[in-house]
Length: 435
Image (cartoon, rainbow, N blue to C red; front, side):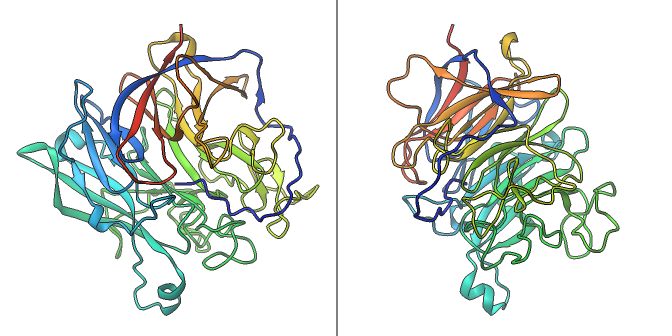
């Protein structure tokens, strides 16, 4: 997933930033209605257009179906545990990370999953010795005579990206609502400070436009080009620039953990997990650079001294987040959590929530679950955020892994009671007003 920051064990100064989105006075009161339980670390739930089923990915490698009655089907839709790298039970950021259904899924039965596979080092001794795994996007097709089961032998690899460390994988995937192209989020490769084996030493992977790490990618899976099972959309922002990978749609990201398109206007929201100080939400736009490793949120960043933001830096061409807040590990004063989790713009039945961006944070601490749910509100192009107050729930909210949205625009929280992908006791909650 996205939580581990590998913060050096030194005393961290507490300070309060002037956030891009400030807290407002009103408090949002919500209830978390249990929807389904008995899952293993649910990282995404998707409802294809025109389908009454919802599909949930479990981090350890299964796709499950929630039927029209809201019941979890016992037989997996797809089981690819044999394709996924061995995971650490107490904490891991690898696994089955994303799922997306082809815009014409109703007719062609095609869908896509992203996952962490055993390293495909291809005779590269350095990678074999030092790199960790390969992140894959693969296409599968449903059996024609049984729409509740995917054909495990129909797999077609769309992309492979080798990964130097186990963390910062990103790999949310979805199709653009207007263009039909597949978008893929990628983290900077892992470890910390965008530095080390597999990272561009001088500028970091987030700023290196020759690597696919630390980016939002945009590809056409309906065509192929050269050795790739995809083509480059002609209007990608860097097409024709030989110094930039043409798959890149946006850059300067550290660990974009869960993105979503607003179902009303198509805007793309991504939460980008911070290093030591700042958690942020960015509004992803074509060709923009969101600053990492030059900046962490709206602060300048020095990878050699990550706890001491420089007073100034070269900010030319960089775009700041629309929402940001203090990370509790390094900046406890006024902090909101330790690892942001991206959500969805609400478009459901509660008119008072329409247009609000519901997102959260994995927890306010690692040792004990203390998940957070936030509401972002836009007014005149500026954003504020509120921490939701949860009614009728004993104890803290579980760890917030992800959010989901159904075809009616309602939003769900995908949670876990453990820090790692083990057991089958995790729950998806529907987020509803408390009154």
